[in-house]
Each structure stands twice: as C-alpha cells, then as structure tokens.
Length: 187
Image 1: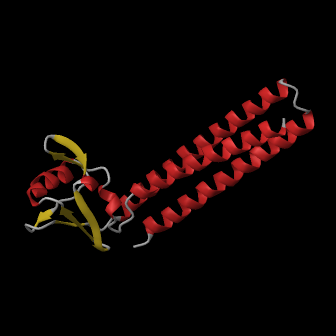
Image 2 (image 1 turned 120 degrees about the vertical axis):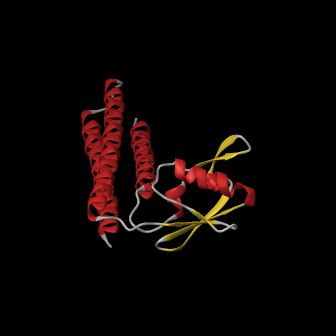
Image 3 (image 1 turned 90 degrees about the horizontal axis):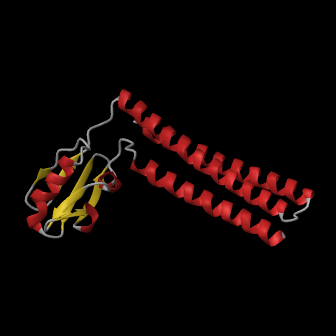
C-alpha cells in the first residue's frame, strides 16, 4: 500500500510543478517596464495566408531596456509583421527602417504599474487554486486507498504530508509574485 501512497505524493508534486510552470509562463508575459522578447510572444503574422507566431518568421531581440528589434527572415514580411504587432493590441507602434522593425517601449505610469501588480497577483491566485485542487485530488486518492484497507495511521500521515507539500508550493507562488511585484514597481 505504501507504493500507492508514494504514487499519490509523486502525482501531487508533478501536478504542482505544472501549476508553477504555468504561473511562470503567465507572469513572464506581464510587462515590467523593461523590454523583453517575450512581450511579443502572442503576436501572430500572416505568412503566406496562414497565421503564424512571430517567433517562427523573425528574430526578436531586446538590445536595451527600452527597445525591441524584430528582424524578419524574409524582408518582404516587414509590413505583415508591423500589421501583426499593431493588431495584437499591445500598444506598440513599430518603426520600419527597411531592414528590421524597431519598437520603443514607453515607460509605465504609476497607475499602469499598479494594474500590472494586480494582474500578477491574480495569476498567483489562479496558481494557488490549481495547487489546492491538486491537494483535493490527492486527498481523494488517499480516501480511496483508505476504503481499500489503508491503516488510519498511514492515512493521517499522508494527509499531513499532502498539506505540507501544498503549503510549500503556495509559499513558492507567493515568492514568485513578490519578486514580480518588486520587478514591476522598480523604475
């Protein structure tokens, strides 16, 4: 029976790792005032009639904290890429120098920074909900094992360990959000 309990812990840790990976991905998309290539990760470009992610048709770089450059693989794509960036509603106006697109990132206002912090905290709450749902699933599995004959002592120990795993992951979520909040509020 202890193999099954160990399997529940493993599944819980794996599910929580996925929740953390999703949180990292979502938080990375939140703009913190510094230019990063991931800011354009949602941009789609018409490439020979097919909507294609920008990263598949161009190289996106951040030469400094306030500028992004988009170097297309084919120069003929410059107007389509510019159209895709404008249509993505990110608030960027790319300038075309004939070789590449240059996007100057405007500085964030204090009000906009506070909105970004709220968005980051909301993503943190979503991750916590996912982690708590993972805990519920793990506890349900332990209850099923109890019905199959698992002893009371092992059940109590398993419930305690599941709660500790959950608490550790929730603390990690809080750490990620605190770091992102500091990053956003730093001018």
